Length: 116
Image (cartoon, rainbow, N blue to C red; front, side, top):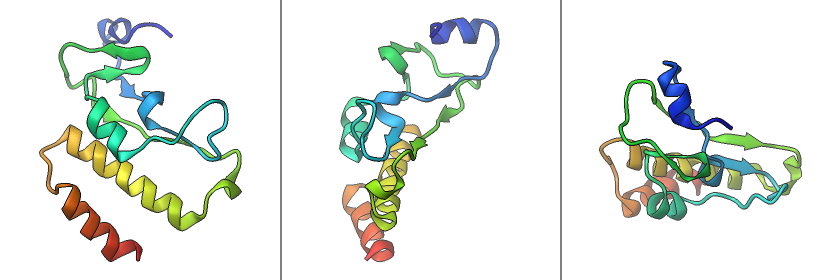
């Protein structure tokens, strides 16, 4: 893949599909492990793109991330568990990309309210 800066120099909009943090492969096929809330919160920054590329300045050409979900084995996880995990991943991305509206304890309360 070409460096992110190449696309930015050509004035493309670039969505962050960082597979280390935002690929969710049901059954953990193809060498992928499930991303987690903790991994996103402790290891990822909005400037970090695939292959550990760091973009020095966030601009309007970099509108955000996309969570890619691969479903080659849909039976690998129950639907309710899947949606609960997706919610945590999206909470983590929101906390890193915007002004946090909730801390981990508040998120736990939200999740308990809606998923249990």
